[in-house]
Amino acid sequence: MPLLDLRVQHQALREPLAAAVQRVADSQQFILGSEVAEFEAELAHFVGARFAVGVSSGSDALLCALMALGVGSGDEVVTSPFTFIATAEAIVRCGATPRFVDVERATLNLNPAELAPALTPRTKAVIPVHLFGHSARIDAIQDLCAARGIAVIEDAAQALGGAYRGRKLGTWGQIGCYSFFPSKPLGAFGDGGMLVTDDADLAERCRELRSHGTRDKQTFVRIGGNFRLDALQAAILRVKLPHLPAWIEARQTHARAYSEALQGIEAVTLPASEPGASSAWAHYTLRVPASRRSELIEYLRGRGVQTAVYYPRPLHLQPCFANLDLKHGVLPESERAAEQVLSIPLYPELDVEQREAVAAAIREFFGAPRR
Image 1 (cartoon, rainbow, N blue to C red):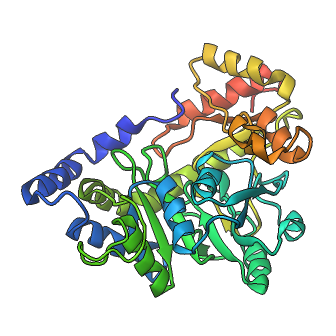
Image 2 (cartoon, rainbow, N blue to C red):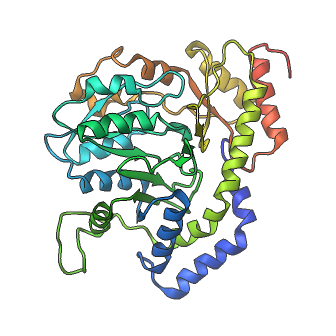
């Protein structure tokens, strides 16, 4: 029982995917072009944004968003310490300083109650992360930042297809960033990413930045980079996008079944979503006592169940951020989560027997009666 099995999804779409690849090969247009433009329009429509700009990865989407907003040396950007390094890495690559705010215990997303004290005259942007596909309290974050003239960049790398109060994640802030890494809810055949915005000027800046800051291949209006989305990846994603709602629904079904099957185990904390949120369920992530996590991992491995820990060390304790001088204990919820989280198999094609076997193994480990 793998954590994720991409082969099943590929088999179901093998013919249309092969046709999409052949279409690009026949066109010999591999960089940007009509495939990317069509995919941008389709994804913008799907999430309800005015503009979408395809880029080379979710990491580069974050970097491009910060550059488009003019974030640079002397600026501060507030984000969560409990996320993949790309979120804070993009801040540093722009020359700015990351400022970490602790997460909420239930959702593991940035805590709005701790955000206001972290804002300073140097704060140029806030990057809330919709971790594991679960919505942050983006309305509270957006309202607080809007009142202070601070931009919000949503890190929705794991959350495409999720929503909060009927509005798609990634469309609340000035810019939303998605990833098409193969394991994401919508995965490419490699890296890929997308920015979405309702701001025409920001969209144009992002288009320039992704192509070395040029408008016409001859005039360079700003310093950018090579952040372009390949036509091949766009064509593949165009085949997959119409299936995303059904895949999200399947993920939600599996998540509900897991939560029902694992209820009542005192040592297990089940994942939680904000009221009014619809999660993309990029991962199903439990919390278990830190003292027993390694033992549980080995127990499940012995029964053929693959697991993963996202993320075993919060960013403020990573060696690359030692210059911030943040010691153990300053962000306790993030540190506690890093010691307790464990993700178990979840993907649309997971079958019922596999799911029930995973849940049964966890109940057996903790000595809970079978359900």
